[in-house]
Image (cartoon, rainbow, N blue to C red; front, side, top):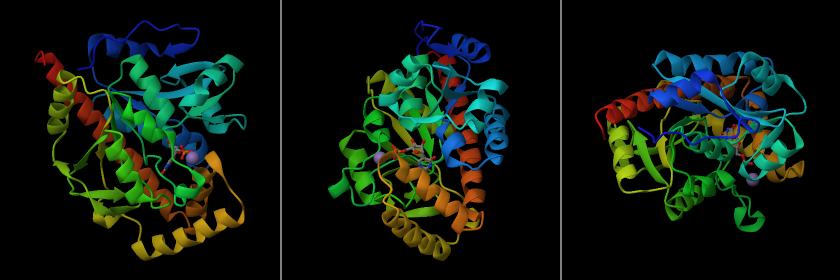
Length: 316
Ligand code: PSU
Ligand code: MN
């Protein structure tokens, strides 16, 4: 179980009452990111799916805490009005960790990436976080230097993150190398292979395998005892029969990379551009997989948070 949350300035960070009560009582809480709602999923489904993600956490006995910035206040746990802003407002900015303070100072709306969400979750004392796919090293990064701040944030943020690996829109082997360099531990949940988001097997091995949430909780407890302040990444693949057809995947990937290049897309617009291309070019098949992934990750994160809270109750 995570240590008692620190006191926060409520004019800048507002922890929803249900989340605050759960944290104070040592009950399981799962943080959720909001960039997937604003920039990763199409309207109007995005708002409905956001609700389903929270339901998936509740279904396993944990409290969901979706994180976003609304009117310059970082929200840890969104009410309906705040969710409506993040899902539907055209003024919502994609906010990484470096942007957080600026958007707060300006009083703006922001959807948090994995980096920003992990930072806020750790600040609020939340130990487990679910996302779909992590950012990583982009193809061509040796020239563009385009590497997601998700990686360096996970290097110095003590949190357990559940993701379906990274998408093949990225340079997957380079991302794995960076995770190693940055001291981010990776464990495969029910797999020895690093998942490729839409694909069960992203083409590379994972060194450590776990098969049970209690095993993850045991690793979390050991990490606390050893004061390891980097993230633990739990990679959770789609079942084989739920993945996107690999041939379709490979074709759409090549087209999407070429389209991004032709359109001159750069910087933080690259990921949303490629995600939108996938959703369109697969006729909704990638969206189907994306939704299944985030629901599965939310449920697994909740089971891990429950196992971790049980450990805490045993005094570990
Ligand atoms: N990768 C995905 N889906 C996503 C994202 C990444 O497969 O929705 C989002 C996440 O919020 C992630 C962010 O933290 O994009 C990374 O963006 P960038 O590469 O600009 O750091
Ligand atoms: Mn980038």
